[in-house]
Length: 134
Length: 446
Image (cartoon, rainbow over all chains, first blue to last red; front, side, top):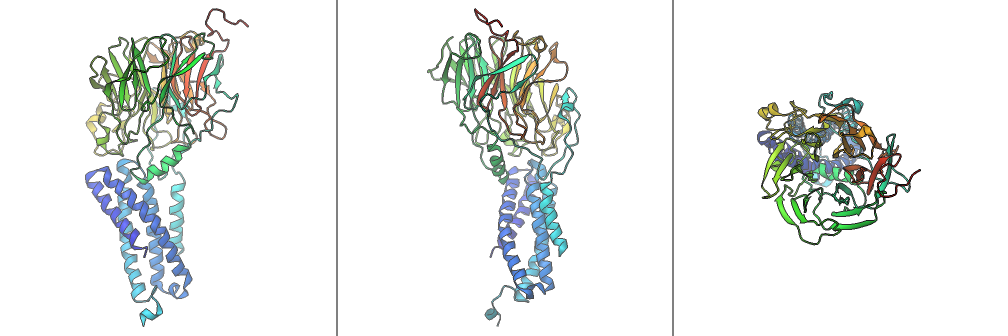
């Protein structure tokens, strides 16, 4: 239930970063900083839930896709932590170029891990009650 | 997946290590041509915010040889600046800034960090009068001259007009010699830029030697335009205000946070001390003192120390950078000079004749600390001549806590150097060690 929130926040960060890149209007950079911060706080909770799934069920750990999903999300999260520090700088270099690049890479990774995550649910039935599958 | 975990570990640890150039000895940056390292932008800048712990009973700052220091007044509520009146009365502005708004997450964190560096005492927002007629360093009288001020800082007296630069306006009050309380309401001479952000709120003030003009320092509304360039209108400048009409023009611009406005006594040139920008490294950008040229542009925000372009400003303005004047004298980086006074009294040793004392409030954007002292810059023919010397130190404990932090300076009618110490709630008075400053009918002879 938590995962969509950081995903929306990090996609939003990329959009407001691009808006700042084109306009140099600080309001967009401020949006990015807030979106990143909220995204990271909720992501921390989502990671907890994900880790419980991952380590709580041996069957999940046997799925190769689950490893890629978890690893990709870990990288995206790590880059976003760096990104929130970059965005804490003052004015133009809080976004261009490092922050903008990090935001774009994170969204790319989330696109891949999101796709794999959907596969985990629909093909492997991860996070689905036994009765629902039948 | 150990790779993923390693990335996480690196990502968490990377911001915590303040990777960047090692700080250099700040003394190498004191003087007219400071060495400037390459700018470095951090994930987390190396900071050290000193906690304000106050002075214990009997503790005082240390002074250079040939001097002594005593508290003139204690228990003040954030004393920030001092004006000595012609009759010898001493005005102390007890003041604090407005609560800054939170426009982004960083400001919440910085707010937490900075809170501990300020005195626990709520700023008085008033002007207190101290009267030490016999010059023994113990005021016989203490009263509140003006109360309920809006972050007062600069003060100037011309004839019977007392001007107070509150953070949003220069106010004029009628003053009669010997008065200890002004009850008449002030008249607003000129509005000053304040607004909801009001990042640099201290408005320094001085009068021209002929008394026709006032000069007000108006600091920038950000570190480096991160609140938007529109918020910087008429800021980072020294305003020249016509005393008769209140009309103003920008006398000089590009001065990020100019304070300590004062006329050099020999050449009658306007000087100020300036707080330069943060977060480019422990040794960038040096704070400085400079003479101020009419119409001069001193770089902020587009460049620093002449033509060094700041990459954080967009859009850039190469034509402005080209016109930027190099300041006269570096005080080294992040010392935060907030007060300056030229010394022409006779109570201090001859070595302190004609030069400028500078009050350095002290650094946060650097580790180890820098500033937290009063220095003396010798002058010859109206120009700095030689290295700044430490005059009053000992504001910082061995644990890097601040007992006090020097701000505004003034010279009293007996020649003593007065230091407003906001974190310590004290006004210190420095005199010659042999106490020759003790003027009056019957000096005590030892």
